[in-house]
Image (cartoon, rainbow, N blue to C red; front, side, top):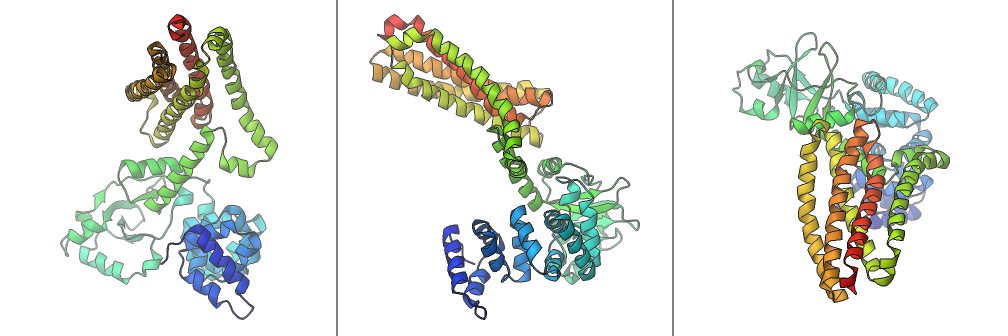
Length: 458
């Protein structure tokens, strides 16, 4: 399989599409056959909707199903509305339940009903599983889980389990990594990894070497908590069970990776006061209302920095070189604060940072920031001293850089924790407020020191 650049693939797809005739799509089919469905989906997102639909029509069912799952909701809905309903049902039947449910949820209400009706005729069990998945809220274990897993009774032997696995169509299972042990009532009594199975004696019953009381989640569990548990316990799969303990499905580590990437991207965007999903679903007025309060709050605090600068206007006029270093101090300190905030926000999401142990995280960040601040302060102070030809000027610059970076590290650590404690979104509040406080305190220290040592600076 080739691994071309995205631009190269787009160019070849467009060229093949332009050359295609009603009875001759060999070139287009040749290009599609050589590419991974995920790469094709990425290319389709760069084309206009009609071009994407035309190319999608020439994908084989397996590739089309995988590509459909990777497309943006808007484009996926556009394609689902326009391909034959029978083919749409066939594609859904090819996908795992969680992916099929996601595709159906992206269609209009009428089209979703039609898709499920067609899927009922094509694969009744699959249709029922998709309907069940859609009953759970978005971003929960119930929407992530799949029912394509290997399950056996506790009395079977290791040899019988291996024979059973060999008899199953590999495409009918999401993963072979774990085998789930169920009693006659469908209750989950244990999990056995493929590794444990291979090293076990052929005649040993699976009940003798399976893991009892495995880690599980309920179908209503938030997807971030699912990801946290898989990470915490180093799992490849995690069972989803109902209240009595019946196995409803499993969530696999590949789905969790998608969740982590999605959540990290959303958190990172919210730190800048924006959210990709909300921007896509809301009107410009609604998005402006969402972002404006945090920007106004930042503006109010930054006006404090303006007052500080105005108060030291005299020293700035007499030592104009000071102004040249203010953007450097602000930018470097701001990056330190954003790094600290990103670490804390992600730690709060994954459970690695606890509000009850806030002092530990603050101490660790202070130590880390102090080391970085000392290094940056020495470097920038040396540059300042050489530039101004006044060693005292370098001391002012170096101390100001150190204090500003320490402030940014502290604010970047504490503000997300305070936000979480008082019910605000830490990813939304961390970036704007950390930057504003760091500017106020950093500039104040910088200019105050400069005013104290002014007669040594000129």
